[in-house]
Image 1 (spheres, helix red, strand yellow):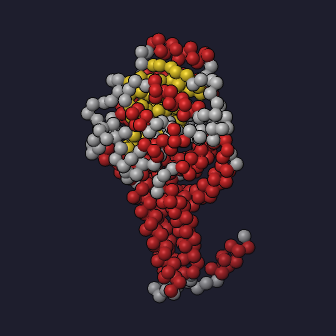
Image 2 (image 1 turned 90 degrees about the horizontal axis):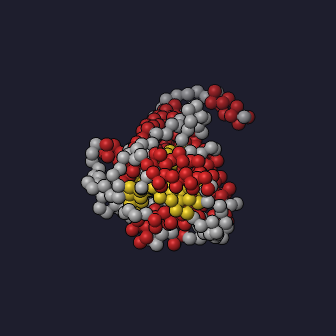
Length: 408
């Protein structure tokens, strides 16, 4: 507080003037600020805005879709704590408007009551099936095993994965995902947002964090450099899964059934994203903050196994955000009392703020996310420190991510 008081007193004592003559240091700082601003625009418009541009192309009919829809198998993993959620999900799955599909529920230790309830669906709907993860299996990823069993039980060419706690937002969800399987496309990435009840408090930074996380891998897929996906809304060809020998490359890890698998099977030209409102899935959690923290630590752990240039690109972005504000502050302070330099620095930051707001506002509208996008530049500033926090905290539980540690 004393430093700010002294700085305020120093500024107050200055005699401000307007002069276009700058010292070499002032010129260097203002030039550096402008250069960092231009690099920020590259990230905004050549990466993050690509998803909205692609979605607009699709709406205008400039994206080719399959003329003959493939047969689809929807695989749902149901664990102990998700029993009731499966019963809420099934009515939405059996009512999908799609000509040829089946639903396979992989039962991972859920109650006998739930098993019987799913069996009733099997009796009423000929396209609903149930399979089981053996109770006596240890030292393996039960999720990976469950997905493998579900895909082995699948009869159709295309597999769409979702979780028991998720809910499609349309009865044309399967159609929206499956229409992308034109010849040459083997993987389709969808988007999952967290569901909020009416009046429920939102953590605006966490919503922004999830949105940035999704925009990164979706944008890279549009750029034909796919590197990951999220397993709650993910589709790929059954043959592609088996050609990759399933999850054999990472059987030592509990996680990686989505991001690491996509990293292995996705290639330039064989991956698409689906961004229509019909394709979006909502996930339901009692504690959304805790759920997102767990997911961030999970993906933070598996990210070290990803083969992608994006890690370096986004690591540089984190440094860029911090540098931008440091150079801005230095440019303002060292330009005083010449208000021309101060005005130039403020103008750059104002334009940066407005363009950032515009890009993330359109992204939020596309993904159906509501967050304080006007605070996006500040969110970007603190995001690297959150990433550092997850990295440090994640180290304490790294051992539990390996399959020699039993997880239920």
